[in-house]
Length: 498
Ligand SMILES: Cc1cc2nc3c(=O)[nH]c(=O)nc-3n(C[C@H](O)[C@H](O)[C@H](O)COP(=O)(O)OP(=O)(O)OC[C@H]3O[C@@H](n4cnc5c(N)ncnc54)[C@H](O)[C@@H]3O)c2cc1C
Image (cartoon, rainbow, N blue to C red; front, top):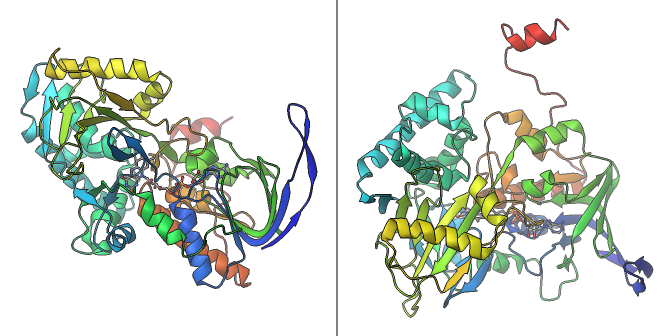
């Protein structure tokens, strides 16, 4: 990295001098989340250390973030090691002895407006129908049939949510995992995503499981420790508190502009910004992104998954790990509750009583637009319907606003119905073999998961290392994506007659 300091004048609310810096480097990595760290490790392992990493926050880890709450530390973002066995995230958790608790989604009780209900049989039925949907998906792929929404996939398999209890079960099994409803999600890619992480072919026979991270060092610890293999203390190649505003690119290289006036000239850039950030136009591109690229980026979905934490003076809920509320009027309304008082979750010396609920999709957008007090009142009204009027008020209350956060614009990606393989290829295809795209969403197999971020960063790091060495692999993208057969369709008949 070669750095020259240029003094320039910045006009903002008056006139003052600031030292805008100019950097020159071979590879600039944009974003210091799991994907950026993985890219940096792989570039370094391949002999490329003329790199700069730019991160807007004051710490590495991205969506791996924790905060103190009551007398413990809670994860605002990623919380589970999802998929065990040889999953690299599981391997890192083992390497750094991350404290985790085994999650059992079947340890669940159900409530509706009449109190506790027995819905276990119906819950098991849905799990069986989900298996049938997965088997059907394989058959469809073999016959080259088109994708279906999750709603249709489940329906064909035999499941239809006929009442509020069914809807609550469906939300818990589907939305609480995918972050979006079956109507919006792809059946085929949901099954693909499941199989790569939990099927035993990739991560081995022990892969099917989820471990909930309860380590006081935070989930971020394992990633920050890995990053230390690349960036030593006060490493000048790591620019924290530096927000990217604009990216200029051409077939010779890339120039990155930052909010504080710095400029970074690089031969290659790897952006790891979330698909939400790319969709939200938080970054200006020059030249503008081509249509094929936009088609890829906007076709994908950034889901929002909001954990709303409450600490109470006493525990008034069941000892089970999970509780599901079947709201009589609105599907998914404060549906999925998690009991951190369950054995193994809180440290032994904790006196907290933590019960938290997860919102997704429209409810997440809604709560983000409300004050904490308004959300708390709404949630307490639900809890009183479940447990009666005598329950205490929470002493602590907190939730993150992922959707409106300009550095994330959501929680994790979900493959929507209508997004084809080719769209995904375009979403991650490089621009002029100079700007490369990594991040969880860019993994067709593991999108949404930490392992998606890890693998995508690694692959892109290796690809760019080859480019630096003058052996850039050919960039693949689809300039035009065509429909499946439209022979008899009304679209063809109508539009071609015009
Ligand atoms: C609520 C929630 C729950 C989740 N649960 C799980 C889970 O249990 N298990 C699991 O496997 N995964 C989970 N995930 C997903 C997982 O956290 C992500 O897949 C992963 O962290 C994404 O890493 P990344 O490097 O691709 O992106 P990011 O972590 O988003 O990294 C991108 C980085 O770019 C930075 N950035 C953005 N804009 C700018 C800018 N303009 N200038 C400079 N820097 C910028 C950001 O600050 C960020 O650090 C969850 C995520 C959330 C939010």
